[in-house]
Length: 89
Image 1 (spheres, rainbow, N blue to C red):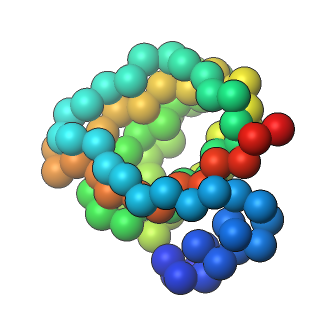
Image 2 (cartoon, rainbow, N blue to C red):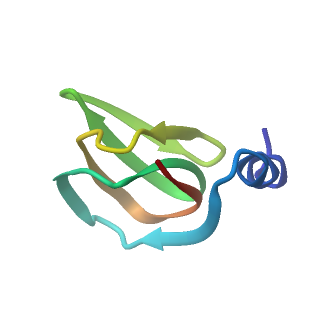
């Protein structure tokens, strides 16, 4: 799925669409959100850890994080740019 298709899919499923990024080396320790999130990496890379399992996402990769799901984020050496969707549950 390309970026345009991902954005269209988010809107179709009732997600609010955001473009954003995080700086190189940024680490966000375990936390949760009050919303369902879907993210597609459009530049750089990020590692998301859930249930003790780390998974790296690079350009074109996407993932979903459920509301209330504990996760941590670690940004790669070049930072990360992304398109994301948030949907309140």
